Image (cartoon, rainbow over all chains, first blue to last red; front, side, top):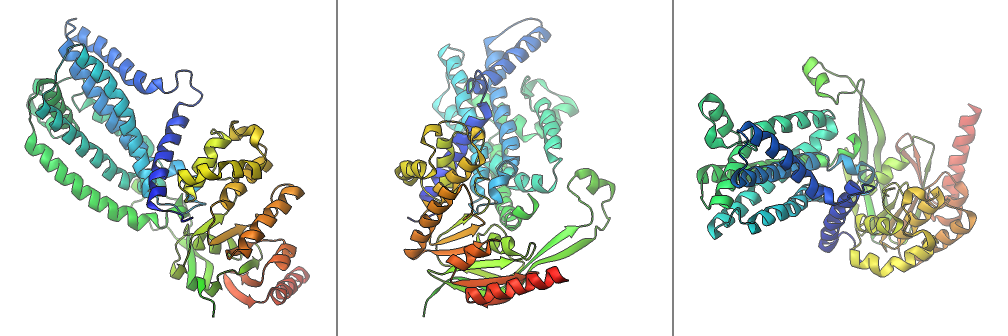
Length: 258
Length: 249
């Protein structure tokens, strides 16, 4: 037989995702249902709290916006954290076997995408309940934004997975950064409500624009922030090329540091 | 003349060992311009050799002589600091068997994961599944989490998976003496049958009897340098005389 073929790389990617998934929810009573439960419970909590802040007026529109914001933020948060740990989580294997390390990064980011795919079930339920009906253009634009976001997450992971091996406290720093990103990404509020210097600052946050554009596209069929999304796509592409160079340069000696 | 399946061309490996560790941001921020001294440790120095297809080569030397580093360079885990390694075939490393296993997964799940990490396709692992389980003698425990296995069971399973890779080259780091006497005999027979079918083996072992018995050639390393490369008996004599001299010293 021939080892390390393209078919093997594909199987390795699937097996690593499958293993990650099993291990993450192993020994827990609700198991994989936590994938759905976590963002949903988070949504309920924020919905109750912010509905109270908004004067107790619970609207389906606010619910749909909030849920979509949470699901996209969860994708980005998990993509950043899983991607960063892609190499350190496989340290034992990296020291003993030479396999294409990039597959480890791909599988980690993919894991966040799989979780996202499950979470969209909640969105579908919302659609069936009649809260929104996306247009074809809006849906396609949402798919474009999503693809660009996932690509950007992968590109960031090419840097962060290597950096974590060398600077271990990056893990704690990123947890704090992602908390900050949560508050500054218009997850539980809308960019449209923000004005002044703070509003300007929020509009500089790419994730805030991604969430805003996704909401408008999917829930209202409006296509906005096109220029910003194109710029972000080009930046993601540049990040990918730089990340690839950085990863290839540093991965050769990673077993010495891990 | 036999075509070399492995060519190690003037390979050196240097590990830079910092006098103090610098893997936190605090250490970078508090002393951004501080130069941290590094010790340069030569694990391998200008190592040169060729291995032909079908050879069973023993790599011997004292602890710290560079044997495991050499194997890791051949396996592609470490990159040489200088020189080049040419490998003309597929290679399976038997380094610390079972280390890549996940204790939370069952034996069945680890067979697939480990086999695929070693380079096999899922379909191939599926076709070899029964052979692996039977060879490892763990059929009754296959759906048990590996954390509940004895160390012998883990090693048997890891060996059974790795031999099914059917590679051209096997890198063996102290693996011929794993498990109980019965399994040692079985694993050795399996390995010898693979080698008799044209596979190439490189064995790192402290067990000189194993090297004497199975290897047709020996590479003797001392402080990262090849001090002998040739017939097994001659190499072992030199090694034993070195050991004798060292114990007299």
